[in-house]
Length: 262
Image 1 (cartoon, rainbow, N blue to C red):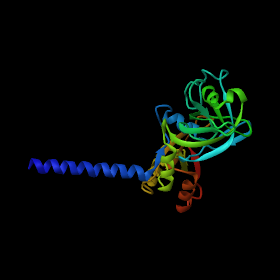
Image 2 (cartoon, rainbow, N blue to C red; image 1 turned 90 degrees about the vertical axis):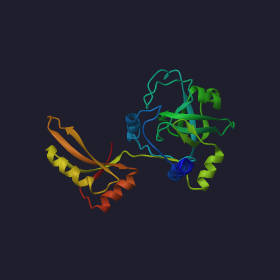
Image 3 (spheres, helix red, strand yellow; image 1 turned 180 degrees about the vertical axis):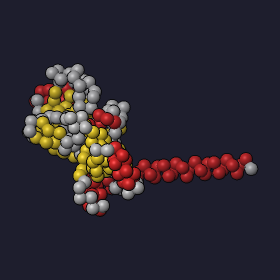
């Protein structure tokens, strides 16, 4: 009996490992949220649409292997010790960078197209807000690229991982071939389905929409008018993209609903 039990336990372990590995490879998804670098709340905040110098920027997800070309600059002493967009204290000697739309903690390989040098940085800030520039490297990263001498340079960016974890070019190429590319998925899109002066009305709507589609979670958000009167808004949360939220509105014929970002 003991021998059979051991064999059974080993069989269950193998099956468990297989299922776990299979699911992680099939998903190929890195959910945006908290990491050892950025809190979940800060991550959500940095993925909201924002406006700088009259121009609107819409942060979005990225996939491993995604590329971008443009001009890189660097920033150093004037910002050293100040807070970055993800809540960290900027260290000009760290290997970090600012990007206008890519998620916080995206790992990026930056290649200087003018001299062939390259380095790896982690996005922890927003910017640069200068036309034509796509990334602002820390002083240390910029020095490795030769930006301390030229100021700016033509670069190619390549997403190679998230939250400190990076993938080799060979791993990325294999993932692309096998359609298992890891990507950031945003879950802070929502749909407002109702607004009530009385909390009881919002609760009724919340229960109704909880049964409508189990993939999404209804929540109640309180907002106060200028005179202090409460307004309870019912939001459906958990949409991974604006298009998914639009499909939800259309499929359920929600004429008065609209998309929000939490």
